[in-house]
Structures are given as structure tokens and as C-alpha cells.
Length: 183
Image (cartoon, rainbow, N blue to C red):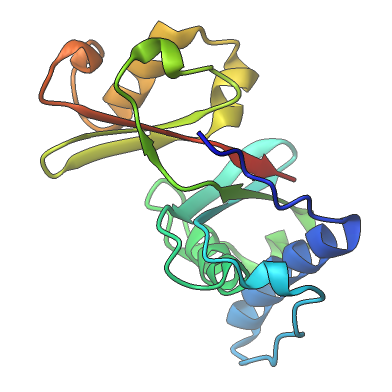
């Protein structure tokens, strides 16, 4: 698998986090800002991305787009709003919460189908499990944060898809791995 090699500078990471913040703030204010131009053309790369929002270290919203079908900086703008206002697990973000937000961004490598489960390294790879219309995705940092081994990571990804925890043993289930640059 080709690794994700964006090698973002601290300026570029700050730019993307600022975009996420501006996107959420403008939605709360009801304004339509002009977003600053990316500081480097590599931010035009067409990669998937997730925006995770936390308050006091607790999850407050997390939404992403796994397909690289637009420049990553534009995906960040959209996913920030989705995480703040459309994550079905949480109520819409309130303006009083804006200054408390911790923003984490995960930029995804392209998906690679897994043919051998030993190709999965928890904490290094994220997973997408799919069977028909059901799918579940967990970012690499989830396995790392919970200290999961490969089987546990696979089981939780299956459950996130609404499938039995042992679904990864089924030939009819597709499993994909990816890497993420998380900041």
C-alpha cells in the first residue's frame, strides 16, 4: 500500500484547522465567508477527510467523506459543518460551544481492499467494512486510543456497519484499509 505522504507543514495544518473553524463559525453566524487560498498546491490533492470535534476531550461530532472527489481543503470545509450540525449522534452545535471546540482533522489515503487480514495493522490503518448497503468505518486512531488488537478492531468495525462482530470472517464482506494523517 502506498503510504499517505502529504508531509503537511505546521502552517498547512493550521490553515486546514482554521478552515474548519471558519466553516462552523460562519454557519452559526449565518454568513458566507471567502475562505483563504491554500498556502500550497498539495492541498488541492483529491483525498478523503474526516473532521472530528471534541469538547473537553469528549466526542462532539465526527463526519467524513472517504472518496477523494474534490480538493481536500474543500472537503474539510464541508465536513466541519457536517460534524458540527449533522452528526446524528449529537444535537446541533450551539454558538456557546464554538470557543470550546477541539478540532481534529484526518486526511485519508485511498482505500485498498484487504485480501489477507494480516495486512491490517491496528493504529496504523483505518478500516471500512461493507456488505451490500451496510458499511462501517473506523479511523486508525480509534484502535490506538482503545488499545485494540486486529480482531477487536475488525469486530467493532463490523458492529459499526450494523453487522455481527464476526462478519469479517464472511466471504461476502468487503474489507478495505487506509492510512490517515491526523492532526
